[in-house]
Image (tube, rainbow, N blue to C red; front, side, top):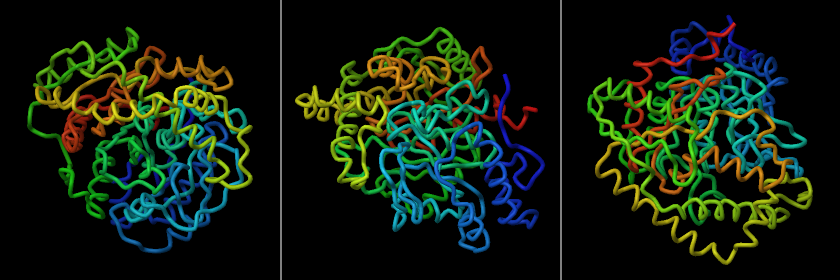
Length: 469
């Protein structure tokens, strides 16, 4: 298996973002050196990985010469290409219209820049984030740096591929059905989907009837994820949620862990079940109390309701495309999955109000589970990472949606409930690719997940591509 990465003996080395910030403060490296190294790395791996949606290298060079403050001042990063960033177009993983640069930062970009991070541009995603694999017929697939024959996951595919490949230590990601956790699992990264309301959303996402999308980051280390949330909270904290704080190590509380190896309605592969059992055994060895549950305690109807709501979002984009994106919008250039979701929603639109009402009540069911357990453990994905082509939208809607629902059977639940959930690269599949284990907690208990993540990272350190030749 031939991996693709850019780790080397330059200013970035194999450091995480916290480590680079320390080197910057000590004067060992400069922001300009870090930005140039990241640009060189982007140019080295992008022809193979296809993770870059838009480059803004000259603006990044200019920003490196200014002091703006923030814990991550001078550290290179990328935005995922579905948020508004001043001076950059927003393409949403498609080529169905001619985009124009945004006039101003959206709510998330404003916060993200305030941490001191310097964006080199934007990363690729599946069209509108609807698929768990970015394989657009004209834009091309985003490939996994561990093995480019396999998908990098999605929808935050480019961000995850670049962080795993060592291009940058941290990148923006967001999650509407698993889109932080899925690519984190595929690429061997840490991916926390935070509690609802933890980080700001751009205006269009705030207007959704059920706010299933969450901003966040993907990183190679727990401390980078924890430091990002501490810094974001310093800049703008939501007083309605329990604070995370500046977490720098494991917690001392021994947790009650519910282990679920079957999703609401889909089968899990024997390999994923076994790897989840191994993670449960690791938790027991660390002194946590583990109990196995049959399935998540929510009605099976949740899956159909979520799919209909997901499809309704596609309909809003397909039918309102000219109003949202301008006269150049051409729906014939959308991929087959987006158009298939639109057809599904229009056929079942009469069911949508009841589906939305039921989705709004799902957290009542999970809240009952969390009366008895502190966290829940599942595999992040129900099957191993597939090869490029398995989720190719040109394969036809019915085939692709069935394969998608099988693979991502565990992740959408926390998008519905708003509860925090983190994927950690604690396992490896038989073909040598990373496998994520997912931990979820009650609303507002993001800190609990980060403390547990620190403990597991110390107990079973994960491999990064920096160790590969």
